[in-house]
Image (cartoon, rainbow, N blue to C red; front, side, top):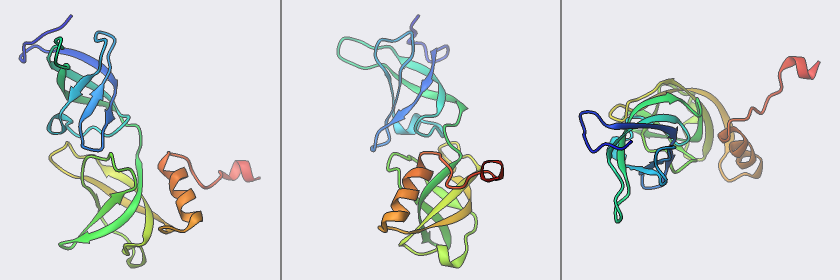
Length: 171
């Protein structure tokens, strides 16, 4: 069932992929091809989040279906890796993942983490909606960017794994 009616659009659910330019794509069972979502219609979705999408324009022979994220159902991650940048007195994370489409604010960080060559791990404390930035809290300094061990740890943490074993495993 497809609908071109913006007041009662067709809905699909799926995992969103976001390009480096900020355009999202979601595939649903009711469409053979993915639905394109312009950057201004992501509504706070991040890469690999499970989302609900309103399909606003059905696909045609020469155009892809277009839609907007109406709801983020579940988040793919709660932590991000990157470097800290200070701009106009605010701390921002420059994420290692270039497909992150929104600014990420760090509410506070120790002075030794605020250096352009330090990689850090942050946890989300408040999700933005696309018009408001994501707020995060500082977790840890991973190390100096460019160093082999730091880059390996950044990849591991950036993929959602922990560097630390639980006490029960170590016992």
